[in-house]
Length: 241
Image (cartoon, rainbow, N blue to C red):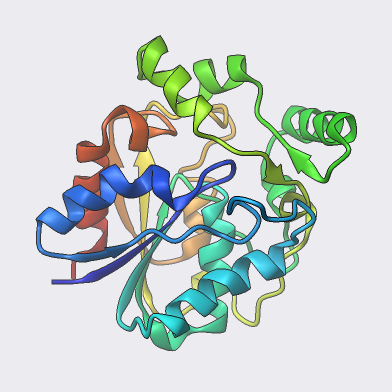
């Protein structure tokens, strides 16, 4: 049995991944779902990408976790890439779930369409506290399009303002993902239109991993809310030897 660490995306905490973690645990695995610095209750929204990455690297160290299957969702792809660069000795496999795959010197905003960059810039300027939020209509139609309205609203109500600096900070890596020595997988939810299908997660971003295992699963960007059991199965398939 394996040890899985599930790293959430923007606006989330580890708590939102617990229904997924429970299904993976039921298969006999050990599962952790920490919350990244900047998304914890009471955290400053001035947190940058380096501190966010370091918070998960420190979690692996403090929990003495080894041979980890490190899973990153969306923005969490930035985090797991940075953690893998800092602590490759602790990781058995990297799993990206509809996640950003950065090379050295790239930021998250480099990998999204211009209309998102403009939207986030505008929202961050309006809020004035270093954070950015996602408008509900975009959440409903583009992020969780496979759920009913009640589920979409309940999930949206669980989200928290996200530190905008983590979108604009450029990652500093010694080794790009394609050249990292650990095994890699990419989970692609086929109905995910949080990024438009002409500007896709897979293969546009997944191919930056070099050699990787592809696991495709029906569902939206927020499959953790709409069908956690289906997502858990995909994570197990992505993480197995």
